[in-house]
Length: 72
Length: 335
Image (cartoon, rainbow over all chains, first blue to last red):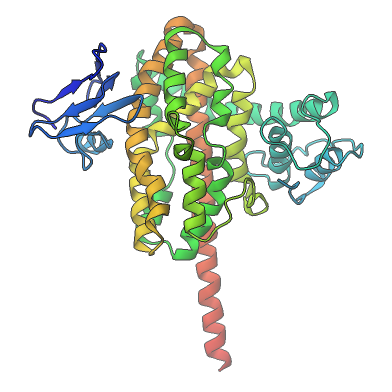
């Protein structure tokens, strides 16, 4: 998912985003991630990693494919 | 669990002690290959197990001075050999960059081993996949427990990040999602025994060492940096291999529940590797910069032992194949 996406809290929590260089963005305290097509993905981990390279096979979540992309 | 079957004089002596009979631990021979020795690693594994679930019906010897003395004798040798085996890699990583993420990623590239996951994905037979699952159960049925010992030994942002990672490993409030429970489900679906420690007698020395290093580092405050380095190397080398292993499990026709454990780890460990490198190791070294060398030692120790274990496992399977071929040839000649 390279385009626009949003991480939202349904309880007015302060969502924290931590971009990792050459990697995903870590998202904390969100309840849902809404991808660029508007599909809502529930967050069921304390912290999730959102794909930013567009190559993940488990979008919107990172599956570490960026490593093989970067190395090539 | 029951006490494992001894495999030599060291594990005999520890076995006897845990049964309540006094027995002097013999000295470790000079020529022993510490990182692969069945007898030494099993002896150490039994001593470490006292700090986890222990053994059924045995006296509580967790803090018995005699068993602790045995543990110290064996683990100090283990640590020395591991430090010697990894020192040049750690030096190289320190020279490569000043940034801990770069240093860790550099180690992952240079401390290389064969890809067990690649073999499982493409080549392994159903029996070999089952053997892999059984051998790995020694760790996965107490998944994350060794690294949990570090939590009270650190503070601040590194502690918060470690707790966050462990919370995910421990099911985030849902007992049925405990990773150890998911692994038990995976074993059961594959027709294997899910009881804790069931396969210890089948686990070779180099794989016992892969397990023991986590206890060596986790149980000592002095080694907290190395324990977190180890955790990080484990997470960084998990996501992509888990995808391959899941594909191998599906290829040989094992149930979806068995593959599901590995699919879960593709996603979970893609998160954990970032959290571990940046939020755990990064924050730890901000608070305690003098631990840098130990963090990298932990990373290199994990990678080195994984490499030895994978090399030995693949060699053992290749030898089985040769034996099978020779048997078939012999049968043909005889008939």
